Image (cartoon, rainbow, N blue to C red; front, side):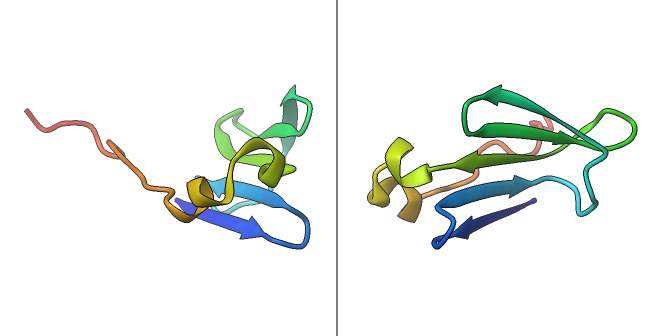
Amino acid sequence: MRIEFDLEADALYVRFKDERPADNVDIQEGITADFDASHRLIGIEILNVSRRLPPEALATITVQNLLPSTR
């Protein structure tokens, strides 16, 4: 997984798989989910990030619980 932020475009992209999307769905204005040919989620794009999140939130993005527990 990779998180990319484009300051000039004010866009955040969370990439789960490194491939080109075959389809996408607008979840809400400015948020799009990308899918591969098998309809699996491969990425999420968020536009106008600075209006949605304060700058300090972007600076502290963390990934939690990425892998299931091995209990």
